[in-house]
Image (tube, helix red, strand yellow):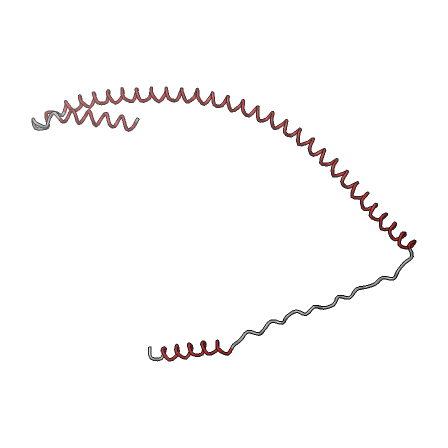
Length: 173
């Protein structure tokens, strides 16, 4: 701690004293520069006209080239639009067929769901009947061993046998 405190004081004094003497450099102000202008030689009006005609013919040729490119692009775009309309009609037909298929599948699924719910009801009904039969067998089995238990507890043996047999049949079916 004794070594750190003088070090921190030294750093603080150095940083604060540096800020007093350091000044940013002033920015230079831009001075306007004259731009040189080129003066062309004067030509005769015929030479100017010839030059103008050459420029116009070159522009005309470029315009004709661009026009031909635009015509080919327009033709290609028209063909693409026609193909697009054909594909749209084909897709509409496919959509109609898919809708019909979906309706048929839903009807079949509804039929199978009804059959499944009927089968589940029948299964649970048969499972209950089997559990009742097993409970009756458990009661009969419990009556065979009823004489082995003392009198107040001997009535629990047929009841426990019925519950055990019914539970086994119910859980394993």
